[in-house]
Image 1 (cartoon, rainbow, N blue to C red):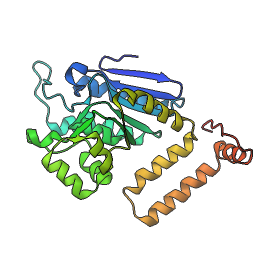
Image 2: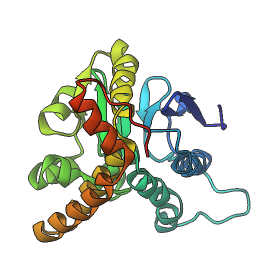
Image 3: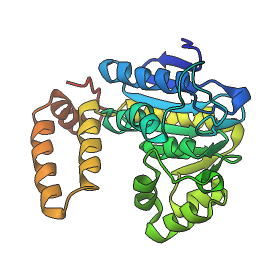
Image 4: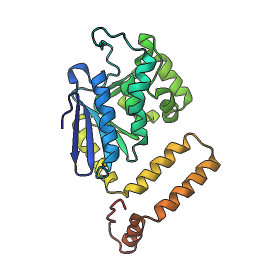
Amino acid sequence: MSEGSLLVEVEGAIATLTLDRPTALNALDAGLRTELAEAIGRLDRDRSVRVVVLTGAGRAFCAGQDLREEPPPGMPRPSFTRILRETYHPIVLGLRRLDRPVIAAVNGVAAGAGASLAMACDLRIAAESASFVLAFGRVGLVPDSGATWFLPRLVGPARAAELAFVGDPVDARQAERIGLVNRVVPDDRLVAETRAFAERLASAAPRALAYTKRALNRSAETGLVEALDHEAALQGLAGRTADHAEGVRAFAEKRQPRFRGE
């Protein structure tokens, strides 16, 4: 289904969101930002979807904010603070709060807020031709859309500072070495490899994955004692699910479990 600048495809339990402004390297204008936030909200309510894939059309994942974007005629240009709070933050928070795994299939350059968008996903699979550029400094700006929060947690504070201060491109193999992406695959295998990984996740127990994502999100903001307590509470919820009972039966019967999200 096309929504102007965003393609939304649901096949089985996997939803794919494709940023579809290839001639603009999928730069984020107001329309695309609105469509993306709304699509994430709808997927949050669609319990048939177990995994979400985010990718870009053409030769780029996302070039970040569309610097050529102009306000409607007669309207003042909004401040960057307002744009971020009203349009970017709902996207980033939506991806993190979505209680299903989100995979970024990075098919080309991910620059500026496009890199932030990839980092906001739970997992990143990159094509060999992919690259990441925190290009904010080149236009006199500060890394935003969660970049200063995600980057140190992915690559460590010293490496994050270097990438943020200098802004040099990071190719796919380097991104894999420093922990920015989970794996790198040949360009012509990106779709197939991402799909196979998504299907593997889709076959897992949905509520267990949701609780796991919740625990991982919380762990970044709490100490060990709080994390232990939160794990215990979530494990109590998971232990009462039908999926847990099915998993135990499947283990005893030496077969693959059939999880239903119940």
